[in-house]
Image (cartoon, rainbow, N blue to C red):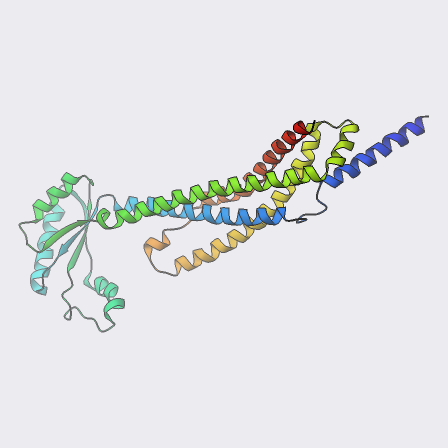
Length: 306
C-alpha cells in the first residue's frame, strides 16, 4: 500500500514537472522574446548614456560660463593694440569686480585661425583682435555693466562679451536633448512592458490545457504565475545582458572618437564613473519590469479564466 502511494506521488510529481517544463523555455534565446528584449535594452542603454553624457557636459559648460567674459581689443594698428592691452590689464587687475585676468597669446589666436585661413597666415597679414579672458566675481548684470563703464574710457575699440551670450544656448540645447533622451527611455520601458504583456498572454493562451492540469493537481494561481514570471525573467536576463554588452561596446567606440576630435566641448560629453553604475542597473531593472509585468498579466488572465 505504501509503495502504491509513493508511486502515485512520484507520478504526480513527474506530471507536475512535465507541465512545469512546458511553461518554461528549453534554453536561453528560445523564441523571439529574448532577442526583442536585447534590442530594446541595447537602444535603452545607448539613449541613457547619451542623456547622461549630455547632462554632464551641460553642467560643466554652465560651470565654466559662470562669471566668464572676454574683452576684445579691436584696433588695426598693432602698436596701439598692444598699448591698449597693457593699459586694460592694469585696470582689470585693480577692478574689484574681476577675480582673474589672462591675456590670450596672439600665437594661440593664429593657430585657431590657421585651419580656416591657411598655413601661411601671419599677424601682419590680418589684424587679429587681442583677447583678454576675464573671470568676474559675479555674473550679475550690474557687475558686467560696471566693468564696461570702467574700461570704456580707455579705447573706443574695446568690447566686453560674456561667455554665456554665445555658449548659453548650447548649454540649454544639451539639457533639452538630455531630457529628450529621458523621455525616450520612458517610452522604451513602456514598449518593453507591452512586449512582455503580449508574450505572457500568448504563453497563457497556448498552455491552457497545462494550466488546467496544474489546477487539478492543486496549484494556485500565484504558483502558476511564478512559472511565467520565471520564464520572462530568464528571457529578460538573457536579452538584457546581450543588449547591455552590445551597447557598452558601442559607447566605448564612440568615446574614443569623441576624444580624437580635439574639441573641449565635444570631449566634455563623457560618462563619469558613477553613471556606469546607473547603466549597469538598467538590465536589472529590465528583469524586474519583466517579472512584475508577467506576474500581473498572468494573474489577471487566470482570474478571467475562472
